[in-house]
Each structure stands twice: as structure tokens, then as C-alpha cells.
Length: 398
Image 1: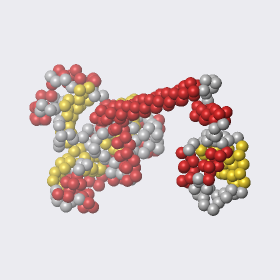
Image 2: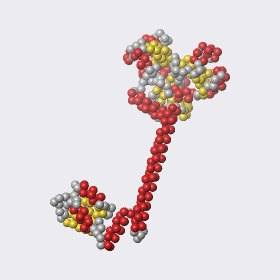
Image 3: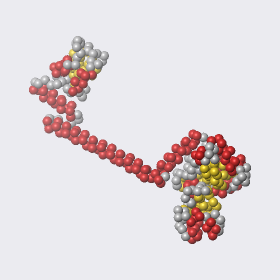
Image 4: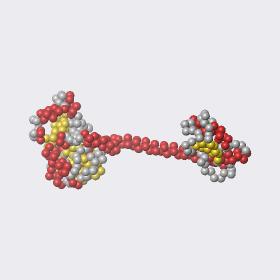
């Protein structure tokens, strides 16, 4: 996210725009530079309107003033309260004003000069930067917040409250007129150069907040002044919403427990899968070692074990041949097994037996899945070798 602080006057833009690179919740780096030096690939671009360029007004909307009627109703309500023609001003209603306009009630309005906003944004647009959001530097808050900025020689104190943002007089003795300053839930935020003075004047410890940190906090505002001629399309707003949600999930302090929970869950899953794989590997190795021990103990002449089940079958077949007993891979057992799966009425045209394999020709067995399963249960495999030639042999033999 690239957050750009708009200058109070266009002439100040010649010295460069103060800007902040942020993840949406903290300052990554801040600097001041001309519009042409700002990166157009820094993510979402947010412009911050200085507090000195915004006025806050409270209006009462009549019921059923929503929709296309709302701009004309708003201009009629503000016509006598504004020094300039409403057509020359950029007027933005509170984020929840649409609901208020339906039923009627009080709401806030932010007002700034259109020509100033055009001049402040034109160098950025000329540099190829698309400003997706325009937010106020300070905005109304439910709980009062005292903002003290600047340096002791030139400082400003502003009070953010439910009815707007008020510039306090330089004489702190006059602050007694503002009831919000005496509330227990008052938050005080001051720039580094003003912390000591605020502490000695108010006898309260303020929260340190630099200008860059204030702009990052401004980027989280629900107020979006990018309306009217500065409005973004629905696709851009949807994309911005997804990006904001992603940045919030990655960096917002409130989501920190969720992030740690996801990391812990992923780590637990990885450890669990590794542990399960290790157990399965141990069980497989133990089974292979058991087969090898059985083979070596049963047939001491076997010194090199490559395929224990196949070598054991061969050794058993060799013993059966030596003893004169027919093995499962001799001609008669193989032929008897084949007869059990031959379809009725089929007779092989040719039968050959070699190397413990029975080869028959002139039969059709490709649709006899049940017979193949029975042969497999006996430790035999039946495979097709050609159009009408089938080979029956011990399973695993080549």
C-alpha cells in the first residue's frame, strides 16, 4: 500500500509528496518525493486529505431522501451553511448515511474544495498513479481523541469527537470549554516533538504517534472521499476490498491469534503426517525383515535376498521337483487351474508349457473377470499375449 499525504496548497507539492509504504497496519518506510518518483506498482494507492482542508457538518436528513434525491436534498440543507456554492464543493456523506436517509435522522458530512482536490491529485495522475481511495487525515470518532502535531514553535491540537474534528485554540486555558477533554476515556496522541509539552500541560502521558503512523491509521478509515468524479468502478472496489481483507488477515493485530493458530495447525499436520509416514515405514521395514529372516531360516542356501516371496516360491517349487511332488507351477496344476476358468464350449487350439508358464491359444478369456480373480487368489496370474493367446504362470514371475 502506498499512502500519499496531499499538501495543503498545490505549491507545497513542488517540494514533493510525503508518502508512506505500508502493509495497511504499520509503517514500512516513509519519505518525501516528487510524484514522478512514486512507484505505480506499490499496491493500493491511498490519498490522505489534510485536516486543514476538510470541514465537518452535521445535518438532519428527512425520511425517504435516499437514492437519486439525496444529492439535491443535501444541497438544499447545506446551501445556507456554506460560504461557497455547493456545486464547487466536494460533499461526502458518512458511510452509513444511505440507511439514515431511508428512515431520516442526523448524519455527518465531510466537505472540501473540488478545485483544490483536482490540483492536488493532478500531478499524481500525470505520473500514472491511480488513486483508489481518498481518506481524511482525521475523522470523527465515538470516543474523543486529542491529536497534537507539529513542533513546539508551530503546533496544532485537534479534537476528534462524534460531531466532527475541531481545531483547538493555541491557549490551553480555553480548552475548559470542550467537555470531551475532561472525559476519562479521552485518548491523547502526540508527535515526538510534542510529547514532553503535552505531558507537562495536561499531566497525562500521551501515546507517541508520528505523522507517518497517523497516515497509516487514516488509511483504515471507513470514510472514502473517492466519490463523484473520483469514484472507482465496481471491479476496482471489489479488488480493493479483497486486498484490504487479505492485508488485514496478514498484518492486523486483532488477527494475530488466528495467524498463529493457522501456523500451529499446519505445523501439527506436517508433524503428524511425518510421524505417520515414519511409523508406516518402520512397519514395512519390519515386515520385509521378517520375510527375509523366514526365507534365510527356511532355506539357508539363499544368501542374497532380493524378492523374498518370489524366491521362497522358487525354492518350494525346487523342493517339490526334487521330491517328485507336483508344484503349483507344474503343467498339471496350471492346466487344472485354467480349466476352472475356461468358458463352457471353448477348447484351446494349442497348449505350450515352458519355464513354469502355460501358454494357450484359441480361447477368449478377456471378459472373465471372476475367473481371473480366482486365479489371483491361488497365486497365479493370467495375462493376454496377442489376440487369442493367454499366458498362465505364478504371480510375479516374468
